[in-house]
Length: 220
Image (cartoon, rainbow, N blue to C red; front, side):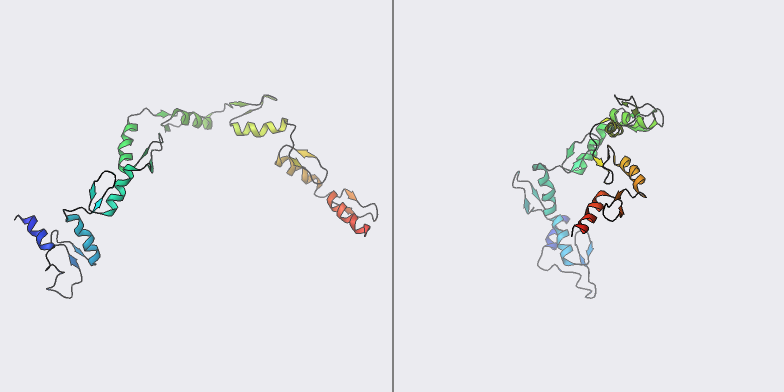
């Protein structure tokens, strides 16, 4: 019997115990690696590493594992779940180790470098979007008044000025506006105005709705 088998035999013998020669010592020791544990449960978990029999079998491919966690990780291979995604090409992987290996593919790729600030990008479209920051060129032009914008969203907001659709209405004079900001500026004009006067008692009110509510008082 070689030394390793002797250690295994000793470890699983009915006489195995914690360090009985010192009753005050609370640690539990692995007889193979002389590693100590504060709890017996931790020692038992560790001892599975040395066992030759593997208790957890994969129901798909019959591969066996000493620990349940190992089986759980292995089962990802058979599932459609791929939680580790490459941020460069969006390819997904079952294991983080596979993702790390995959990054080598991108390491030899040509980077697209900004000629202004030397910032690099893996994708040409990302560089193109970045260049707008440095550029005075305004790519999005209004077909009505030829005003130009750096961003499509800016043009879209501007086009509302030329649209017949005016969604923002003034509650005082019923005037309408294409943008909320334009309505806010307009409302300043009415802030100190008193434009609606009661024909019964000459009381002045700031909005038509207030006037209508006031007139109900006279009807009673």
